[in-house]
Image (cartoon, rainbow, N blue to C red; front, side):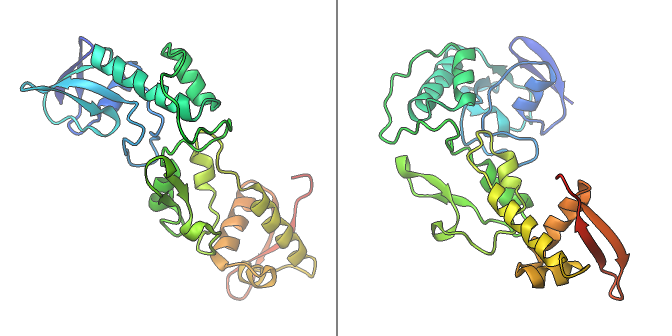
Length: 256
């Protein structure tokens, strides 16, 4: 165990624990727009920047991906930390003024009006804030990894799929949609389309997953994922095993 000082509090943490985890342990608030426990920390938003002293010098680091290896002193409310955080919030407000998370964060930290203007301001309340969570979850947990990625540079930076076109390589696992903090990613029409394709395929009788994929003209991994999802939530009736040990799926349950 390593003892650190966090806002004048002594805290015992495991070696390798991040500053953000240590802060959460004792209830110290550090904002972190781009952080989710299900993905590897990245430090994209920089909102979790804090001031530390490691015994030799004082510097600013991102709390979400700074591993604690030695005793350090952390200050989340120092003048440098507060100024850095407020500047970042103002920059986000200037570009995405209507995103609820950013508005709530600005109110919480008493940032009233941004001192900046952005050449590509986006007034959409579900605007993409470039946190990169979808990119990381796709690389880390996607059925086929790395479909989404950053595109462009500077103020033109965006998150997109290859060649800005829908790709059959995407297996529609919906993890990017689930992890997005602003609701910028929505894939309901695809799910409805596939569900309708499954229903149509079952009209001619019970089928296995490979048969459903062939009849609906969908890649086998896509069909497998959606059948498993429907089965998990009790939306599909399951029959007996066929000679190839594939389940027969009889019909979708109504009112779902």
